[in-house]
Amino acid sequence: MGADALSDVLRAVRLTGAVFFNLDVKAPWVAETPPAAQCAPYVMPDTGHLIEYHLVTRGTCWAGLTDGEPVQLQAGDIIVFPQGDAHVLSSEPGMRFTPDMATYQGADKMQLPFVLQFGGNGPDGAGIVCGFLGCDARPFNPLLTALPRFMHLPATSPHRSAWLNHIVQAAVDESINKRSGGESVLGRLSELMFIEVVRSYIRTLSAEETGWLAGLADRHVANALNAIHGNPSHAWTLEELAKLAGLSRSAFAERFAHVLGQPPIHYLAEWRMQLATGLLAGGNDSIARVAAQVGYESEAAFSRAFKKLIGTPPAEWRRTHATRKPAESA
Image 1: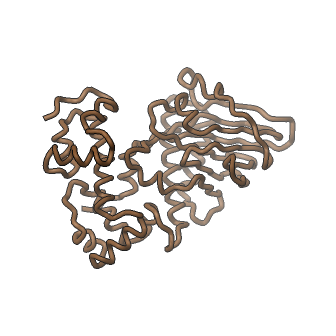
Image 2: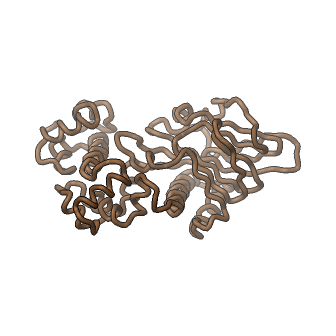
Image 3: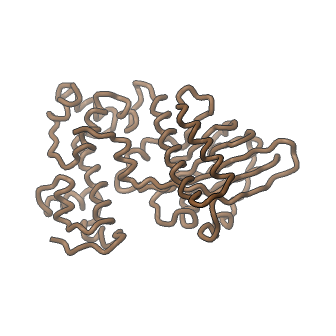
């Protein structure tokens, strides 16, 4: 049975969105964001990794990594920083500002998004919605490792869907007009925006690209990925996956390893561990039951594989990461 590998990964890594700032700025202005790890305790303290994005609602601005060249953004443009790098938004390129962590404090006491007005008295202004997305980075997030340090999706991009424009407009309306349930609506809209940006990015990849997203764009590799994600507990063999991919055993093994950078059976093992950590942290199933759910015939075999890939035994990992009290291990 096949599955949608991208949706499967997004579910397993617990993607969660929130919109925090609604910027209303006048030139000259500059806003610098520190590395996401510094913002996380105030923004999403329970997340493993923080992704930041900005949606320009009106006017223009410049945005880029603090150690890179900025790009100009127009109204409707979206820029995403998947790896949580420090970055700058400004009315002109080359401007810098020391981040103030006090800006992020008190988020739990006010209705989001915060409205921030600052800048000079220039005639040119801009409106920007600033949001965050939390997800698990460990033990295995193939999507995150495949994404670049930033992704810019212009409003005029031919790879952009008309559906995304409706999401953008809804996000703009919801961020300006605060209503009951608005925070939840904006959170879901930001998740949808991120997914659509990723799908647009996939459409830009050439046949020579490598990485997990390139695998989704390769029909042979994608067939195998979807099969693995559709039934991760199945005792997949190289022969079975090659048949689904429509290639010989050797051709499939070579193609998969070239595109994803690892053999298919190793990918399967890592994905099983990602699923296992979610089951251990969030459920009451015994370790033996978790082992069976991710394709291991015995608790002992699962425990050996888990310790090899994660670094600690599953029982110890559960004690450290459990979100609710687990049942006794069988």
